[in-house]
Image (cartoon, rainbow, N blue to C red):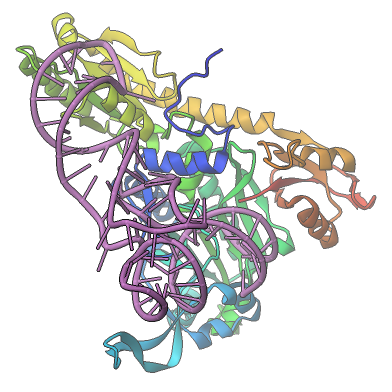
Length: 506
RNA sequence: CGGGGCGUAGCUCAGCCUGGUAGAGCGCUUGCUUUGGGAGCAAGAUGUCGUCAGUUCAACUCUGGCCGCCCCGACCA
């Protein structure tokens, strides 16, 4: 059987990491920049980020948060205040040490004006925001303090991949301070729920809510919660985190307040964030061998109109019909907003044009040619179905069905992703089976293998260390919603309270 | 930061071993044909061969330094 031609070479099965790069290129989402480790996010990719921002921002505001902005630079002494935090981030900090450039004898610019204290380009803002919060918080009446920031951060990574790990990335970071431990913990869980809601209902990316083990915890946190998603190569992607910071940062930054009973107390803080990494997750959840697939709720455009122009007397009528259709489509509403439509008038061959949009992952496209104009029909394609499954239908019927079809695509993508995760999740109670599950059959060129193993674990960090070394497998999370299920840890024979999720991660 | 590889057209790369100042495919532009489909034919544009120095009459080719990128390790939203 001849191999079907795919728009992306190689396919997922042939070479997954290369496929990922090619999808980004074909969909025109982003590209590597002249700056080491930093990416250029192109309009189509950035528009996806803007939709993420819009939806998340609304959810943050509905849960009582307000946006603010804090400095890009953090004085070194702030970062030094929280010991575990320093340990975690020191190795990946970009440091500003000079304030100007001067020409040397050879005419080359060299840094001059050394700063008295180096400035760290924020890898995350707990410390600087903590310092500022200490000035904002005096009384229990100032709490809770619920702040979010949309910003860029820098982590000097050795190896980078577009969206998944770049030296600079865009994100939001929520920072809150509370009068009581209970309230802060409640906030930590609430924001995790927001992330899970967003991932599943907007990105159509099913996630498992859970808690990180001590070894995977955020530097300086008491408790780290996360949502974990399974990519199509069966590896796990952490898609959002929410941290209960206890009083670690409030003690470091001296966030103190006078309580109702007149006591001077340290506040309890949280932080939570998600980044442009989510776009990497979106790609690896939905994209296929023909390119990107974008769920309607976060798509830059829902539908593109492709006029079939043949350079003859019919063209004017076709364009006229397309403009009318564009207006009708815009009058439809999906997700409480007008349906987003583009009319692609570019002077390109029809087939070429259609495939460009398929590769970009637009949820739907509609072709209009002279025969359609005459018959009052349109020719409709859906990205969640094969490019050959296009259908002719009455134009007005098509327009009125749009909202429900878009929702059908949204729901279908989620269901498909969830099914994939379930198909690749197994309860494993035996060490041999566990090792076999996570070992590729072809060692030279590992095939896509593994998945999520739901396995008992006694809580011993040595087990984590060994599995990481042997198989590169880690505890992705201790699921929150799983009922207690007493069992035996297959690695130590010790008792275990519940199964945890093991997997290979990004 | 350790080990390996590579920098030649917008992209992917050949040429280098055996020095004589550049090639292919894709892409781009134009023309003709084709037209409900990622097309064909023809013509054309685009390179200080990463960079600096050395050897030489002559360096993309040989030698050395530097810079950058990729892969494998340690780290990671």
